Image (cartoon, rainbow, N blue to C red; front, side, top):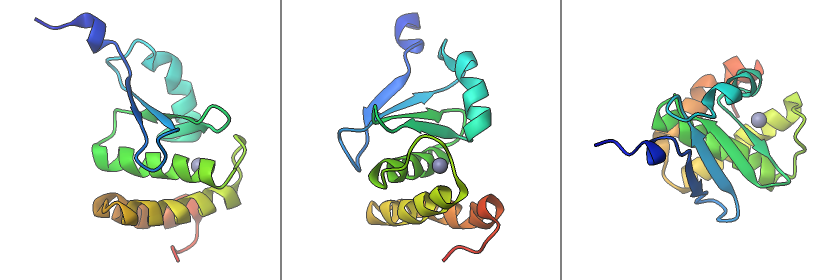
Length: 126
Ligand SMILES: [Zn+2]
């Protein structure tokens, strides 16, 4: 029998790059998902509240994607970026995310980052 209580809980964990950062993965099974959709649409697959060290990830994408998003948002926190997005911050965050993913052996997520980099930023990854 399905436990509806747990079925509606967001998946929460501490980031492996920094245990003080909490990651919440939210998908269609969570009652919060519909309220989060406009935010995911605005910011992409995830976003971060840097002051709260809290990352929200759209759980409707696969694990490779989710780990890339987590590394990207962790990078924003490490780099001290403010919540407002700007193009240079996004490039910097992706460059650091590349090294974070590499350091933990997430080779598929790292490759995905390189594959979408030009589309995201309009320049080649280097
Ligand atoms: Zn970003």
